[in-house]
Image 1 (cartoon, rainbow, N blue to C red):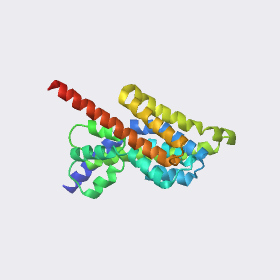
Image 2: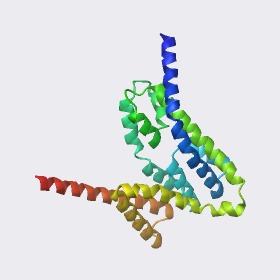
Image 3: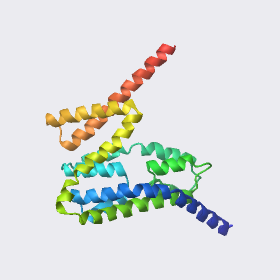
Image 4: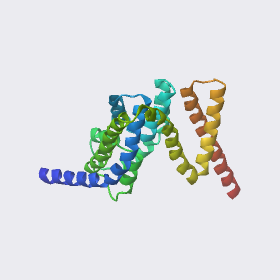
Length: 242
Protein backbone atom coordinates (compact mmCIF):
# COMPACT_ATOMS: atom_id res chain seq x y z
CA UNK A 1 0.00 0.00 0.00
CA UNK A 2 2.81 2.38 0.91
CA UNK A 3 4.58 1.59 -2.37
CA UNK A 4 1.40 2.28 -4.34
CA UNK A 5 1.00 5.63 -2.57
CA UNK A 6 4.60 6.60 -3.35
CA UNK A 7 4.21 5.58 -7.00
CA UNK A 8 0.98 7.55 -7.30
CA UNK A 9 2.59 10.65 -5.74
CA UNK A 10 5.57 10.36 -8.10
CA UNK A 11 3.23 10.00 -11.08
CA UNK A 12 1.21 13.05 -10.05
CA UNK A 13 4.40 15.05 -9.48
CA UNK A 14 5.58 14.13 -12.97
CA UNK A 15 2.25 15.22 -14.46
CA UNK A 16 2.47 18.56 -12.68
CA UNK A 17 6.09 18.98 -13.77
CA UNK A 18 5.14 18.33 -17.40
CA UNK A 19 2.20 20.72 -17.18
CA UNK A 20 4.58 23.46 -16.02
CA UNK A 21 6.95 23.24 -19.00
CA UNK A 22 5.05 25.85 -21.01
CA UNK A 23 4.90 28.13 -17.96
CA UNK A 24 8.64 27.76 -17.37
CA UNK A 25 9.36 28.65 -21.01
CA UNK A 26 7.11 31.71 -20.74
CA UNK A 27 8.73 32.84 -17.50
CA UNK A 28 12.28 32.66 -18.87
CA UNK A 29 12.38 35.88 -20.95
CA UNK A 30 10.47 37.88 -18.33
CA UNK A 31 12.77 36.70 -15.53
CA UNK A 32 15.85 37.34 -17.67
CA UNK A 33 14.66 40.90 -18.24
CA UNK A 34 14.00 41.33 -14.51
CA UNK A 35 17.54 40.20 -13.67
CA UNK A 36 19.00 42.53 -16.27
CA UNK A 37 16.99 45.51 -14.99
CA UNK A 38 17.82 44.65 -11.37
CA UNK A 39 21.50 45.00 -12.27
CA UNK A 40 20.96 48.39 -13.90
CA UNK A 41 18.87 49.50 -10.89
CA UNK A 42 21.79 48.85 -8.55
CA UNK A 43 20.86 45.60 -6.80
CA UNK A 44 23.49 42.96 -6.16
CA UNK A 45 23.11 39.48 -7.64
CA UNK A 46 22.33 38.15 -4.16
CA UNK A 47 19.56 40.70 -3.65
CA UNK A 48 18.16 39.99 -7.10
CA UNK A 49 17.98 36.23 -6.64
CA UNK A 50 16.71 36.61 -3.07
CA UNK A 51 13.85 38.83 -4.27
CA UNK A 52 12.84 36.18 -6.80
CA UNK A 53 13.15 33.46 -4.15
CA UNK A 54 11.07 35.26 -1.52
CA UNK A 55 8.67 37.51 -3.46
CA UNK A 56 8.18 35.39 -6.61
CA UNK A 57 5.77 37.83 -8.24
CA UNK A 58 6.68 39.28 -11.61
CA UNK A 59 4.71 42.53 -11.72
CA UNK A 60 5.44 43.28 -8.06
CA UNK A 61 9.17 42.73 -8.54
CA UNK A 62 9.26 45.06 -11.54
CA UNK A 63 7.26 47.60 -9.56
CA UNK A 64 9.68 47.28 -6.65
CA UNK A 65 12.59 48.08 -8.95
CA UNK A 66 10.82 51.22 -10.08
CA UNK A 67 10.03 52.25 -6.50
CA UNK A 68 13.59 51.57 -5.38
CA UNK A 69 14.86 53.76 -8.21
CA UNK A 70 12.62 56.55 -6.92
CA UNK A 71 13.98 56.12 -3.38
CA UNK A 72 10.70 54.83 -1.97
CA UNK A 73 10.68 53.52 1.60
CA UNK A 74 10.28 49.88 2.62
CA UNK A 75 6.77 50.26 4.10
CA UNK A 76 5.37 51.81 0.92
CA UNK A 77 6.92 49.06 -1.23
CA UNK A 78 5.46 46.32 1.00
CA UNK A 79 2.00 47.92 1.00
CA UNK A 80 2.00 48.42 -2.76
CA UNK A 81 3.07 44.80 -3.29
CA UNK A 82 0.29 43.63 -0.97
CA UNK A 83 -2.32 45.61 -2.88
CA UNK A 84 -1.13 44.34 -6.26
CA UNK A 85 -1.15 40.72 -5.05
CA UNK A 86 -4.36 40.77 -3.02
CA UNK A 87 -6.00 38.63 -5.72
CA UNK A 88 -3.95 35.69 -4.40
CA UNK A 89 -6.42 35.35 -1.53
CA UNK A 90 -9.14 34.48 -4.05
CA UNK A 91 -6.90 32.20 -6.12
CA UNK A 92 -5.74 30.31 -3.03
CA UNK A 93 -9.34 29.82 -1.91
CA UNK A 94 -10.29 28.31 -5.27
CA UNK A 95 -7.27 25.99 -5.26
CA UNK A 96 -7.96 24.93 -1.67
CA UNK A 97 -11.55 23.95 -2.53
CA UNK A 98 -10.33 21.94 -5.54
CA UNK A 99 -7.43 20.22 -3.73
CA UNK A 100 -7.42 16.87 -1.99
CA UNK A 101 -7.32 16.78 1.79
CA UNK A 102 -3.78 17.02 3.11
CA UNK A 103 -1.68 18.40 5.97
CA UNK A 104 -1.83 22.17 6.35
CA UNK A 105 1.97 22.34 6.04
CA UNK A 106 1.91 20.75 2.58
CA UNK A 107 -0.84 23.09 1.41
CA UNK A 108 1.04 26.09 2.77
CA UNK A 109 4.17 24.95 0.93
CA UNK A 110 2.61 24.66 -2.51
CA UNK A 111 0.31 27.66 -2.05
CA UNK A 112 3.45 29.85 -2.04
CA UNK A 113 3.99 28.87 -5.66
CA UNK A 114 0.54 29.92 -6.89
CA UNK A 115 0.81 32.52 -9.64
CA UNK A 116 -1.63 33.66 -12.32
CA UNK A 117 -0.20 31.06 -14.70
CA UNK A 118 -0.04 28.09 -12.31
CA UNK A 119 -3.52 28.97 -11.06
CA UNK A 120 -4.86 28.86 -14.63
CA UNK A 121 -3.36 25.42 -15.24
CA UNK A 122 -4.46 24.03 -11.86
CA UNK A 123 -8.00 25.42 -12.05
CA UNK A 124 -8.50 23.97 -15.54
CA UNK A 125 -7.38 20.47 -14.53
CA UNK A 126 -10.19 17.96 -14.31
CA UNK A 127 -10.84 16.28 -10.98
CA UNK A 128 -9.23 16.92 -7.63
CA UNK A 129 -5.81 18.50 -7.40
CA UNK A 130 -3.28 16.25 -5.72
CA UNK A 131 -0.40 17.48 -3.61
CA UNK A 132 2.09 15.78 -5.92
CA UNK A 133 0.66 17.56 -8.99
CA UNK A 134 0.77 20.96 -7.29
CA UNK A 135 4.37 20.50 -6.13
CA UNK A 136 5.45 19.45 -9.63
CA UNK A 137 3.57 22.32 -11.26
CA UNK A 138 4.92 24.96 -8.91
CA UNK A 139 8.48 23.67 -8.59
CA UNK A 140 9.46 23.90 -12.26
CA UNK A 141 7.78 27.31 -12.64
CA UNK A 142 9.58 28.57 -9.53
CA UNK A 143 12.95 27.21 -10.65
CA UNK A 144 12.59 28.85 -14.05
CA UNK A 145 11.83 32.26 -12.52
CA UNK A 146 14.63 32.19 -9.93
CA UNK A 147 17.36 30.73 -12.16
CA UNK A 148 16.57 33.00 -15.11
CA UNK A 149 16.58 36.03 -12.80
CA UNK A 150 20.16 35.20 -11.85
CA UNK A 151 21.16 34.56 -15.46
CA UNK A 152 19.61 37.88 -16.50
CA UNK A 153 21.67 39.66 -13.85
CA UNK A 154 24.88 38.07 -15.14
CA UNK A 155 24.00 39.09 -18.70
CA UNK A 156 23.26 42.62 -17.50
CA UNK A 157 26.62 42.81 -15.75
CA UNK A 158 28.39 42.10 -19.04
CA UNK A 159 26.71 45.00 -20.86
CA UNK A 160 28.53 48.33 -21.35
CA UNK A 161 27.89 50.80 -18.53
CA UNK A 162 26.12 53.31 -20.79
CA UNK A 163 23.73 50.62 -22.00
CA UNK A 164 23.08 49.47 -18.44
CA UNK A 165 22.11 53.00 -17.42
CA UNK A 166 19.84 53.47 -20.43
CA UNK A 167 18.01 50.20 -19.67
CA UNK A 168 16.10 51.88 -16.83
CA UNK A 169 13.64 53.15 -19.44
CA UNK A 170 12.69 49.50 -20.04
CA UNK A 171 10.92 49.50 -16.67
CA UNK A 172 8.35 51.96 -17.95
CA UNK A 173 8.03 50.06 -21.23
CA UNK A 174 7.40 46.87 -19.26
CA UNK A 175 4.58 48.45 -17.24
CA UNK A 176 3.01 49.82 -20.41
CA UNK A 177 3.26 46.34 -21.91
CA UNK A 178 1.47 44.88 -18.88
CA UNK A 179 -1.21 47.57 -18.80
CA UNK A 180 -2.22 47.98 -22.45
CA UNK A 181 -3.52 44.41 -23.04
CA UNK A 182 -5.69 44.68 -19.91
CA UNK A 183 -7.02 48.06 -21.02
CA UNK A 184 -8.02 46.58 -24.38
CA UNK A 185 -10.07 43.88 -22.65
CA UNK A 186 -11.93 46.08 -20.16
CA UNK A 187 -13.04 49.71 -20.13
CA UNK A 188 -13.04 49.42 -16.35
CA UNK A 189 -9.25 48.98 -16.39
CA UNK A 190 -8.94 52.10 -18.56
CA UNK A 191 -10.88 54.21 -16.05
CA UNK A 192 -8.95 52.67 -13.15
CA UNK A 193 -5.60 53.53 -14.76
CA UNK A 194 -6.68 57.07 -15.63
CA UNK A 195 -8.10 57.83 -12.18
CA UNK A 196 -5.05 56.38 -10.42
CA UNK A 197 -2.75 58.38 -12.71
CA UNK A 198 -4.65 61.59 -11.98
CA UNK A 199 -4.49 61.05 -8.22
CA UNK A 200 -0.80 60.22 -8.34
CA UNK A 201 -0.06 63.31 -10.46
CA UNK A 202 -1.94 65.59 -8.06
CA UNK A 203 -0.18 64.11 -5.02
CA UNK A 204 3.21 64.45 -6.73
CA UNK A 205 2.76 68.01 -8.03
CA UNK A 206 1.40 69.31 -4.73
CA UNK A 207 4.00 67.39 -2.69
CA UNK A 208 1.12 66.22 -0.53
CA UNK A 209 2.66 62.74 -0.22
CA UNK A 210 6.02 61.12 -0.84
CA UNK A 211 6.42 59.15 -4.07
CA UNK A 212 5.76 55.78 -2.44
CA UNK A 213 2.72 56.86 -0.45
CA UNK A 214 1.34 58.72 -3.48
CA UNK A 215 1.31 55.43 -5.41
CA UNK A 216 -0.26 53.49 -2.53
CA UNK A 217 -3.00 56.06 -1.82
CA UNK A 218 -3.71 56.66 -5.53
CA UNK A 219 -4.11 52.90 -6.07
CA UNK A 220 -6.49 52.49 -3.14
CA UNK A 221 -8.58 55.58 -3.93
CA UNK A 222 -8.96 54.72 -7.61
CA UNK A 223 -9.96 51.12 -6.81
CA UNK A 224 -12.54 52.25 -4.23
CA UNK A 225 -14.03 54.91 -6.54
CA UNK A 226 -14.29 52.59 -9.56
CA UNK A 227 -15.85 49.81 -7.47
CA UNK A 228 -18.37 52.25 -5.97
CA UNK A 229 -19.34 53.42 -9.45
CA UNK A 230 -19.67 49.80 -10.62
CA UNK A 231 -21.85 49.02 -7.60
CA UNK A 232 -24.12 52.00 -8.27
CA UNK A 233 -24.47 51.00 -11.93
CA UNK A 234 -25.47 47.44 -10.99
CA UNK A 235 -27.94 48.73 -8.43
CA UNK A 236 -29.44 51.11 -10.99
CA UNK A 237 -29.79 48.33 -13.57
CA UNK A 238 -31.45 46.17 -10.94
CA UNK A 239 -33.96 48.91 -10.13
CA UNK A 240 -34.72 49.36 -13.82
CA UNK A 241 -35.48 45.65 -14.23
CA UNK A 242 -37.78 45.79 -11.21
